[in-house]
Amino acid sequence: MSVNAREEDYEYIELFGKPGLFTNSRIDRDTVPEGWYAYDLRGSDYDPGEPVTVEPYVVVNHAGTILTHAPVTIPKEGFKRLKGRLEFSSYHLTLKDFCEERGLIYPEDNRTFKLRPASESEAGIFYAMTPEQDANLAVIGHVRMDFGHGGTEFWHTWWQRGEESLNSSEFKQELGEVVDALRETVLKDLASMSRYCGEHGGQIGGGCAQNYGYVVDTAHYRYCLRCNPVPGDYQGYLTCFDLDRQRLNLMNATRADIVGMTFYGDGNATSFTDADAYIKEIREELPYRATSGFRFETATDDPTVRKAVDDLVYNEFGENNPRPLEDYENTPNEGMTFGGM
Image (cartoon, rainbow, N blue to C red; front, top):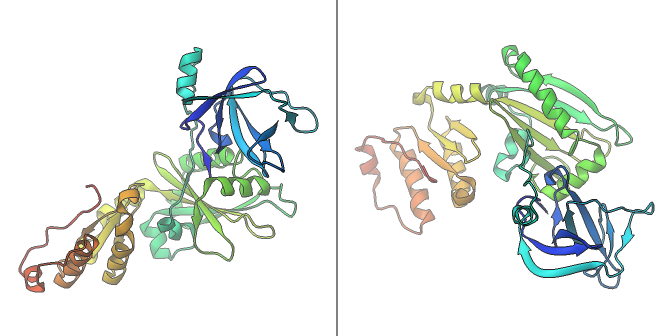
């Protein structure tokens, strides 16, 4: 996994007499600010942890990464020998600290579209869904992409999955901007996709090979990119959701038909009309509520469902539910939320 250049805790170093920042981790090149430079250090075959060369990118014997405000001239052979001209210190600081000490302007993160790795619980929205699910989640459609036989081309096809009114001119313009931005990183070519997935996580289940999921959220839309970095197949599927319509669908759903709803910290929300599916979702996600922001609301008045949900909550804390079924039959449903709300 790689680290964000703006968030990492570095060690101060001097490289060829110039100040810089060192980390044992790989730096996500997408987070390197404009006007800054990241270089990898390669260790020797005898001691991979002892840097011997500085290079633009190192795969084998990676011995750390350096962030500098001044470029390093790399010879034609693709590396520059250190020859003892890398000096470490025990002084740790962040990029912001470094800028303040050096009188440099701290580079804010001005990326318009920021990818985040998907969680395993989000895997379902990256694959084909039923027409009913598409409608409930306000899916507009998806872009199917591949890099051609050589891995460096870019072929794509649009598949409409929602009502035509969702495919507005505003959406089309933003979709083009999102794809253009992704073409600079994960969708640059097949090799770039493989490297990006290896460095950023986002593994999701499903598919014959290991697939990876990433999400871009904007004010009105969500873009879910599924990556399949395998030659000879479609390598990318970008599913697009209308968040405004999705929220409206949730609000307009008839509560009499809904058993319950689940919510996550990243904004995902699902309504359930199947009691077993609702209870199963709570059972699987409740242990991870601290990191996922998971919460739920039981909408049905069915006492058996409400008791089953309460049983799960009590069991999570190692306690038995003291309330018998009769209590639920005689108590109005006031709903329930969990996970920080």
